[in-house]
Structure formats: C-alpha cells, structure tokens
Image: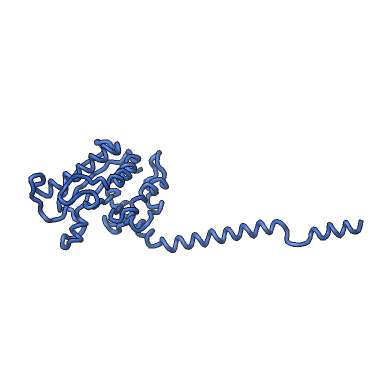
Length: 237
C-alpha cells in the first residue's frame, strides 16, 4: 500500500502537461509576429507609394503624384480595396489577377483620377512603324483580357501614343493614323480573343500629344511609344 502511494506521488512530479501546449503556442506567436515585422519593413516604402496612387485616384492628390510600377512591387490587396464592391470579385482576386504584370519588365500600371492605366510599350506589341500585334505578346494580352472580362461594369479606353518623330508612309500618313490603328488592333484583339464587348471600349489615337516624358532622347521616345488600356473607375468594382 505504501509503495503504491509513493508511485502515485512520483507521477505527479515534473512540468504540468498544459505548460507544454502553452510553450508551443507562445513560440508560434513569436514566429508569427517576427514574420509580420519583417514583411512590413521590406514593403513599407512601396506600400506608401501604392496608397499614394490610390489617394490620387480618389482626388485627394494630384493626377500623377505617385506612379506604381508592378514590375518592382507586388500590389498590396489594400490598394484595390475600394474596388471590391463587384459581387463576382474579391480584393484578393483582383490583386492576384494583376500581379502577372510583374513578369513583364517594361509593362507598367498606375492609378490616376480616371482609373487603372495599363501601359503597354509599343516595342512589346508591334514592330517599328507597324500596327500588327506580334504573336509573342499574345499571352500578355490574353491575361489582361481575362482581367478585363471579369470587371464587366467598367468601360475601357484604348489609347494609342507615338513619339514626336513624324511618320509618312502610304499606310500611315501621320502619327495620328499610326496611333489610332495600333489602338484599334489592341481593341480588336481583346474583342476577338478575350470576348470583351465592343460596346465597352472606346478607341483613341493621341499621336505625340500626350507624352509621358519629353521626347529629347532615344530612351524617352521609346517610353512615349505605347498603348494604354484605361479601366475607368466611374463605376466601382
């Protein structure tokens, strides 16, 4: 009898079982908060830029106070939180659908007071002085089309732009003709390959008159030769 009492008494010695669970929980919480701090430190500057673009879109700042390039950062979901009202969309889904742009070095995206601007450099889409879309750019345009298809309530403006060097060919007598034809090519692709309704799209040829940067160097002229897909945000997602 005394031996069994000593055995039972020795079984109650040592660390209580609940402390093991408590210790595991505290270790996991510590790891979680360390990760949160590390992420916020890396992305803080880019996140501020992204939120600056959002404030500009809402009219708090000027039109181009911040430009966010998705080739450099991953868009925080909060950037597009104001668009999550569409019943078929979630903020996370919108962010994921736009993150593919980071795979294309020269493609950029920014938000202004008109909406979301997807900038497609001419060299990505066309040969010099031509309006035929290169097959190499089909996957990019199809991904953009898939995103545009989901935001059915938003109208689109496809804008063609050139640099300030005049073009004089039989097919394109001026930069107006070239910029308009390139915008039409993109619109037709989005309609034919991505089922984007023609009634949603407006096409504009702006020639050299809406340049992003001064046409004073080869690099700057290359930036100005582009097609911009504008997703208007008069109607929210």
